[in-house]
Image (cartoon, rainbow, N blue to C red; front, side):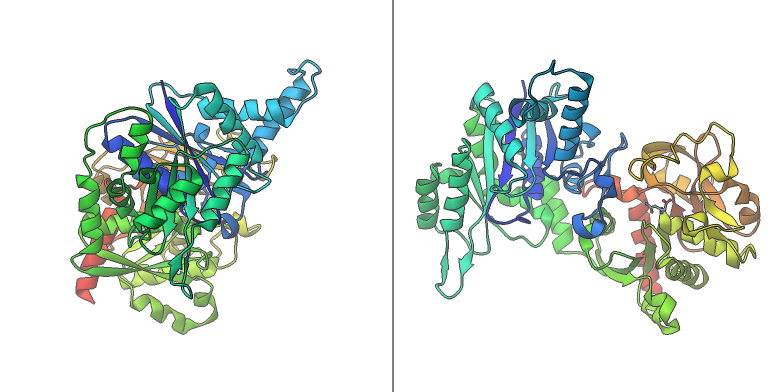
Amino acid sequence: MARYIFITGGVVSSLGKGLASAALGALLQARGYKVRLRKLDPYLNVDPGTMSPYQHGEVYVTDDGAETDLDLGHYERFTGVAARKSDNVTTGQIYSKVLARERRGDYLGATVQVIPHVTDAIKEFIAAEVTDEDFVVCEIGGTVGDIESLPFLEAIRQMGNELGPERTLFLHVTLVPYIKAAGELKTKPTQHSVKELQAMGIKPDILVCRSEHPIEPSDRRKIALFCNVRPEAVIEALDVDTIYAVPRAYHAQGLDDEVLRHFRLDGREPDLGSWDEIVRRVRQPDGAVTIGVVGKYTSLLDAYKSLAEALAHGGIANDVKVKINWLDSEIFEKEEEALLHLEEVHGILVPGGFGERGSEGKIKAAGFARQRGVPYFGICFGMQMAVIEAARSLAGLEKANSSEFGPTDEAVVGLMTEWMRGNEVERRNQAGDLGGTMRLGAYPCDLLPGSRVREIYDADHISERHRHRYEVNINYRQILETNGLRFSGLSPDGELPEIVEIPDHPWFVGVQFHPELKSKPFEPHPLFTSFIKAAVEQARLV
Ligand code: GLN
């Protein structure tokens, strides 16, 4: 029977609760246990996919097509367990469910209340689809004390009471700040935050204390005494130079031992060899390459979290450090000299994106890469822009554009309905709400024999995750192929171009899907491995 580990956060946000959850999942796995990670998000949006990446970081897409919080990306990268729709829920989704039930009359006229109706729905979510997992690590978003997370905290309190300590554990991530003037670590914020949790009926079993300075035994004892935990359950969590060092650091602090002790389990020592090797490669690379990422939300790096990680994984695979030059695509529209920035990089990547702003700059960057023989990796929007560039420059279709930006006579990129009217193939609902009208989640793709991507993947059929509304128009295949852009990956029905490449170029690949979502440090995505390899070769040339 699964045991539940609830992870809450106190004092301030951005303490890295998601990473703590992911690292604990990885440690339990390394001990031979089967884990599942989940997240409860305390905002009212029903569909996180419509939230601005400026505010909330990237939208992480699962195989089964859910648009989720970026922390699920950490979970998947650290544990390799594919996240599912059932692993992320928002308060908005919980309320929608409860309200729909009420409308249907399921509550038989009862007064519908936060307790028990909302909390029941939360508990149902936490325990749903749990089969043979040994542990469910469940992160509660937000900070203890927020109004928003109250129903979640009440629900996990109830679970703790119903299942007992044998099957539940409460872990609280908190901050132990260092006050320079006093030259001291301060434990008071942690004491207050734990007090707040206890007022809600939750007694934390383990405290993970984020700190910039080592926590001396005297401070540890003080925290333990005031917060009602064992001194061994006060885990020091110092900043580390790479997130992949977190599992080893937590293990050294005894986190997994403490968890197993709580559940009266004795596990074998975890095998952290592969984590140590990853960290070694990150810390002592054999050279470096610079990749220019030409995007829009370059001011908020969380918007490209998985992408940055996947590039790092490509570096790990090639034993090099990958430096990222984040470039706002609009600079290429404003001044011609801006292209000089691209002369300094060893590879150009245009990531996913939405809307017309900055698109001409991305098209220019793709053109630069094509003409100069610089490795080019176009992801989703970046593939679409590369196709438009090729259509304009190679195939002479001057007006080539995407109908995402408005009506166009030459919709090289457009909605499938626009070129398959009356056909049933289009399954998405165009007239529906803004949320949930995209091609989302894993779709199969056939790779062309003899193509570069066939060689990179070393497979004939692949499955990758999508998140987009527009597609490259298959009707332009012939003219583009005649002019040097090969369609090397197609949907099995042959209607949707999934991958394009330029055979006559050192490395030029555009993919309609998001390979970055599936890359892991111990299993770098083949496209990123190959792209960085090409960048290493490029670095030798310049
Ligand atoms: N805006 C484009 C579309 O909807 C690309 C989306 C993306 O890059 N994720 O098709």
